[in-house]
Amino acid sequence: MLAIVGAALLAPWVSPHDPLAVDIRHRLVPPAWMEGGTTRHLLGTDQVGRDLLARVIYGGRVSLVIGVFAVLISATLGVLGGLAAGYFGGRTDAVVMTLLNVMLSFPFVLLALAVIAVLGPSLVNMIFVLGVADWPLYARVIRAETLAIREREFITAGRALGMSHARLMFGQIFPNLVSLIVVIATLQVARVIILESFLSFLGLGIQPPTPAWGNMLGEGRVYMLNSWWIAAFPGLAIFVTTLVINLMGNALRDWLDPHMKL
Image (tube, rainbow, N blue to C red; front, top):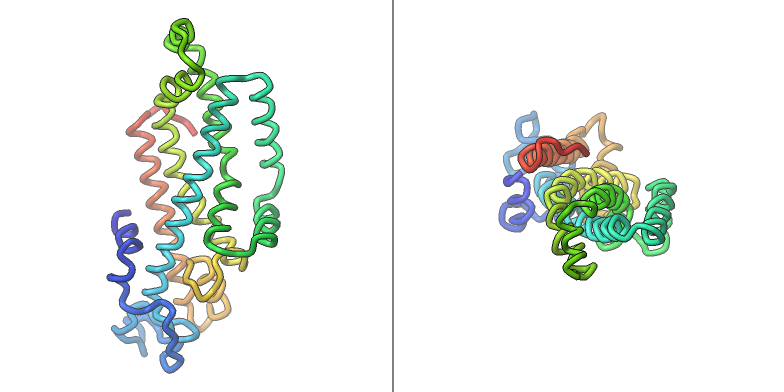
């Protein structure tokens, strides 16, 4: 994971070429270990001669930025909503759960189509769509945990001492939820990367020529029979990154709370 994040952060220094540089004379060059390949382009080039290794590295940068910031948005919305619903109950709980159910009733692709059709495809809009779409997961889990925690003795004692609602929620209940939030957020980064790649593959996400693993897959599918590497390496990058993040999330869950079930 450190290698993936490091390559993404240091892309301008570790990338062997400009990911947008077009060189028609060297289009569809195979990987270095295949016949006709060259060490100048270790993973080969795409249909317009752009270096594939450089595009995979920069594509990882885009995917990780979207994953992290979308998760921050969804975690913030979900935690605030779930905490309020679980703590206050009653009408607040009903409103939050109604919003949650309405969100879950919309197919994700339909929601993404509607938002992107209005706002247009871009990095910021992609982060917004993925962030808003994922908050119900956090809200549902945090609400359930808050309902249980608010009945504990230390919360009752806090009320008796005259603590404000904000202090009880964020000073007493929230610290008991941090480990759960961290685990969910870690696992959700992998999910967001897959969703972003899916939308970019469909042409709804990051638009060419900006490198993103999803749009690279979309461009490469036309060349799968003769130039398989254009789609294979972005696909492999998605697989390895999401696998590592999921393994890290599972290990984190077991370390923080072996009895935690998501």
